[in-house]
Amino acid sequence: MAEHQDRAVQLLTEGILRFQRDVYPARQHEYEYAAQNPQKPHTLLITCADSRIDPEALTQSGPGQIFVTRNIGNMVPPYGEVLGGVSAVIEYAVDALGVQHAVICGHTDCGAMKGMLAQPGALDSMPTVKSWLRNADAAKRAAATVDGGEATLKTVTEQNVILQMQHLRTHPSVAAAIARGALTVSGWVYDIQHGDVRMYEEAEDRFVSVRERAAATPQPVGALA
Ligand SMILES: [Zn+2]
Image (tube, rainbow, N blue to C red; front, side):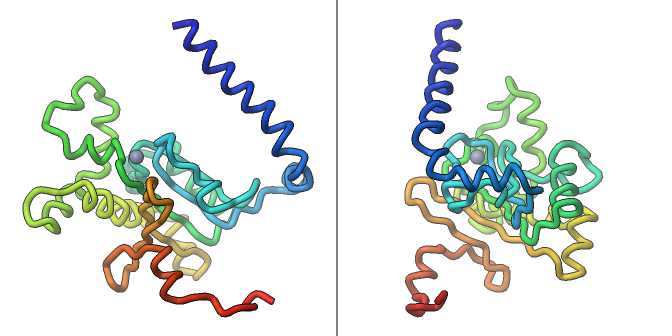
């Protein structure tokens, strides 16, 4: 046990030293700017705790640009049910930091979604996880309806993103910011294997690949010039 712990600390320490040697010098001005100025992230990103998700790499964001909170299954309890960490993060991000956008980001191969689809009793040894997953109960039911019987992993993952977007909008800070046109909300499913994101198009009630949409609508050359 102790050896494994030592190994983990060693990996982390080596990572910090590599960061100091290879990354920090090239981006020193960014870190100095971040340290000397109040943070002003443009986006609140709520995603799963799954260690394969790297939000900053995926969105190519630097220090101070995205305000990230993570939990099992990228969930947002409806306002008033559980006033815990997620609720506090949302209120702070919207009211104090003034983020302009909020993302619910699910992902492929999500263990939480698999847990929801598992046989009854499969999560009995993890009562806290089992209880937390109740925040997505309605997604499982909706997915079963969409799939015409038994919910699939893909559909339950998508329906969970849509459900958590609805829960997010029950938070007073979010509802107020949306009402005054200061905040928009989007729902994503990150495809870890292919490096793509499918974004929820509410008007069409479907998820659309960022890669495919970009390929279909090429940016005009010099658009940013
Ligand atoms: Zn997950």
